[in-house]
Image 1: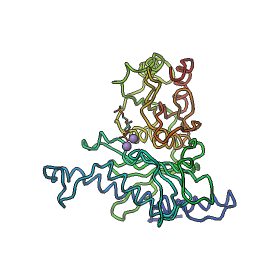
Image 2 (image 1 turned 135 degrees about the horizontal axis):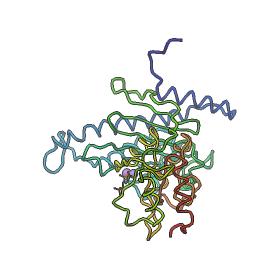
Image 3 (image 1 turned 180 degrees about the vertical axis):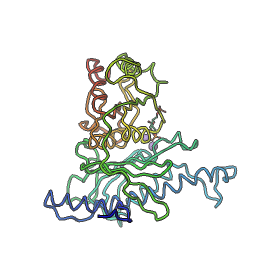
Image 4 (image 1 turned 45 degrees about the horizontal axis):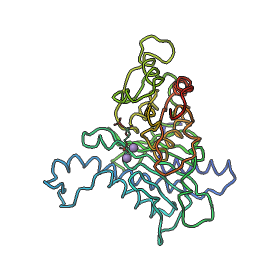
Length: 345
Ligand code: AHG
Ligand code: MN
Ligand code: MN
């Protein structure tokens, strides 16, 4: 059959996968999830337009950082946060939210209808790269609320292990704007066609390539790593130390961009624990867990070095964890190398 000249839109793809889910579970396809995903895409388009204008506003912005319309130029991460909160509140599919930019859970007050999903997001990941025109992104994770008939959502709907996620994904604002998501049945990538304002399927069923040829870590922190972590990084760098060595180094400094490159080309990203505190930098709920969910459904894996990211019961909305993510064999090698170090040592 000749190839259709009309691409597959995100909305259509989500509806089809929701019908397949309904068939598997016997549930009635309500279309809620595909509508929610569509609203996330709307927020992504608004943020993408702003991200692309920001450089211009910078050039045109007058002293005092007001833009040409005389409005106060909001920092892009605040703009992205406000956009997501507003769009998701009005969607009718969200009962509670958590954002990197807001300390407490964000509720969905009347007159907005409290939908059946609880969502956590990093509205703008890679903020340090905004002003230098390097890829940044939005990361989101979606739980079904615990009480299917409840009304207002609560933090408890969000404080669950990533293994219980209904879906997760990210939007990357780069040479093109891409939305990548999974509901647990494959990982799918959509590229925004600005001429029609639609995300079109461009990467169906993404699986992380067999070969882990790249490591991605901020080596400026190496003095803060545990000895086993230092040795692991030396191993992957060594030209001929056998399996999982001789890797090249790539580090963008935006988690979403480093992860996306490794997902498409194979690689391991590390933000290891600080040897003193045992703490990581990245947040579990809206950075590590959603990307661990994506990695898993693309054949990869994510760990703190001691525990699988998807198994961790969050103890707070902004809990930080060490994150080692990418090709399963490389992450498991890291786990073996640091395994006998006490976790949090
Ligand atoms: P955010 O901009 O949402 O705060 O996230 C920044 C994170 C992540 O994107 C990236 O991997 C990491 O910070 C980079 O940290 P370093 O600059 O310490 O390497
Ligand atoms: Mn981030
Ligand atoms: Mn952020």
